[in-house]
Amino acid sequence: MSRIITTSTVSSTKERLAILSMSVCITVSGTFAASGCGVRSGMERVDEAKQAKEQVEKQQHKLEKQLNKGQEN
View (cartoon, rainbow, N blue to C red):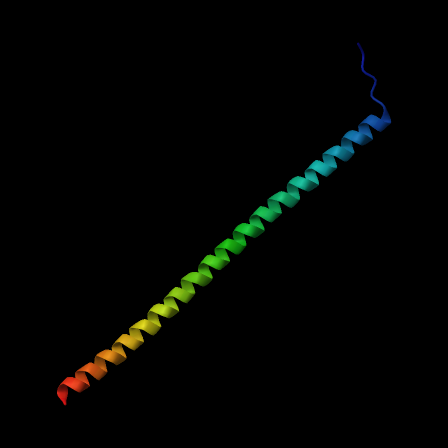
């Protein structure tokens, strides 16, 4: 059984390969973009947590000063 390869078969195979390659590229680029967004979001949350910690420490220091001032009076 000999299989005859025609021009239409070759072009059809090339088209399928091109479509498959494009879909893989789109999927991979989307995966990297999504992971990049996750990292960025995580870093933003870390920065927000650091800022919140600094604010709490400042407020605590202020309250300690007021407490010490009240004890002196």
